[in-house]
Each structure stands twice: as C-alpha cells, then as structure tokens.
Image (cartoon, rainbow, N blue to C red; front, side, top):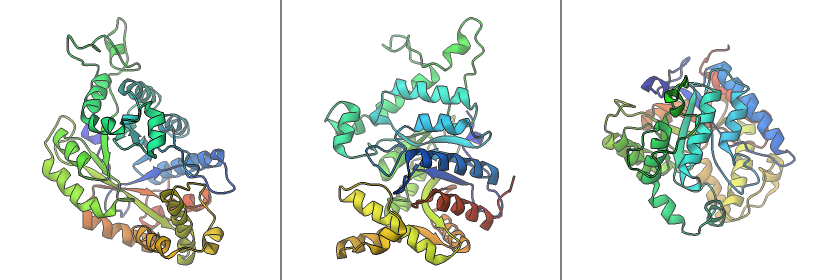
Length: 362
C-alpha cells in the first residue's frame, strides 16, 4: 500500500481528481435490479471517462437505497470494470465484526488486485432500531465509543500482525498476508488502504492522528465541512501511509441538459429526504409527484436548506459550483453523488460533468 494508491491525478481541466459515490438509489416504479444495472453502467462510464474511484455507501432499512451490502455490490462492479478504484464510502464498522470486514475486503482485493479502498464510518447508516437488529444489542453508543479499538483490531487482521500472547494471534483473515507466509505461499501481502469517513470532528481528528486519508460527508453535513477539514489537517501526523494530509469530500451534484429539469430532479430527491427525516422512508419519487406534493412551511424550509447544498443545473453551472466548492474547502478530491429518480438521469449527469471538464473519452 502506497500513497500513490490514495492520491489521484486530476484529469482534463478539473482542479482535483473527480470520483463517484453511489447510493444505488431506487426510484418509484423501478426495482433494485434496475438500480444495480445503473450502478454497473455508471461505474463503466466513470472508468471510461477518467473518474478516479467509485465508492458504494452502506445504508439499511431504506426502500429507496439498495446499498445494504457494499462488499457484494463491489464484487459485482469488479466483474464489470478493469481499472477504476472501487471501495466503500463506507462500511459502518460498529455494525460488523472486524474479522468479517477483513475477510470481505481481502476477498475483494483478490478479485481486483490493487484497486480496492476500505472506507470506514462509525455511524450506523440507519435508525436506532435497525442498528440494534444489526448489532444484536441496544447498547449502540458502545459501538461508536469503541471505534478506535475496533479500527485497531481490523487493521491488525488486515496486516496479520497481532502480537505474541494476543488471543487473536492464531486467527487469520483469509484471503490475506498469512497465505504468503504459508509453505508454498504466493499470496500478495498487499491490502486495501483504510480511509476514515465522517460528518463531524471525531473521525477527522482520528484520521489525522493516525496519518490516514479522510473523507468528509459534505453532501449532508455542509456546515461542518471546513471545520472538520481544518481539524484533520491540524491533527495530521505523517505515517507509513501518507506523508501529508489527503482529504476528499462527498458532494451532491446533478447536471442536466437544461436548468429547469435539474430543479425538477433535485426537488424529487429532496422530497425523498423529507420523508426519510420524518420517519416515512420510501422509493425516490418521480419529479411529477414532487411537483404535485403540497409541502408544509416546515417542509419547504427543509427543502430550501437541503437544496442549497446541492450543486445542480447545466453542466457549466455544475462545473462552476464544483470549482468554487473546491477552492473554499481546499479538498484534494471531489466525490460526486448524483441523486435522481431515474438511472438515465444519473448516468447523463456524470457524462455531462465529464464533458464539462474535458475528461478523457476512452
């Protein structure tokens, strides 16, 4: 694992590397199969057009989000791509035993050598009741509070370097480094680089202290972006992984062929968020349903606040918005998530953004 596997290279006229965050959204009238087919199409477009990496986020108990099993989806995408980096944005560590994650991502690394990222979050990626079902406990704070210890355990499983006397010394994550040291072993000791994800200062500080790359969820916590990135940079200590900070931010952006259509699509995605935040999660509504919906004053305020952080419009408008955001935050990479009802709209958005920056066409 080297810094070159973490740091991307800007393509075309983009100020920094551009990447994709996929929530595998399911629109009304569509199926999870449709959404996963769209993910394959977008990943292949992203690879063809020079996007640096493609991450899938872990969510649960949300009808409109089919990314409950990032490792399974990433294995599927690995079979349909050749070069683009694939990863989790992220796997929610407290939901899983560290050994299981090490095994899953060791398997992914064996499938797609040298192009797998392991992004880790400490939130549940769902509501409290679902988190309790996932973790088989209702003591949810314990998982978040134990995050540094869980991270250390996962890292040791990935590196296969528990010290003598540790109860896990004879336990090995396979595929993994143990195969290289077994008689006749030829397994590579390479492992996926770990990223820490966050929407506040906790993971920013931890990533800095450990010298790890950091990904911030600007797309749903925009007010905390600059403070968290500042904290990450101030806390950073050089490590065997990085000699200087490297931070990407997740950005909600949607480009369409005309501005009016962008507003329609963004309104539908925002209505989906209204329903999710008020305990009524469902499929992503159509623009027509969103236009006919009677928003309460409180809902309208939420919509206005939410959409203020969604960069949308024509390709040129989106490019200008992305450029401005990168300048304001100093982000080393922009990871774009385009939420819309239809997969064709999402696919077209990434193509328009690639064209706006003159990204490669092969």
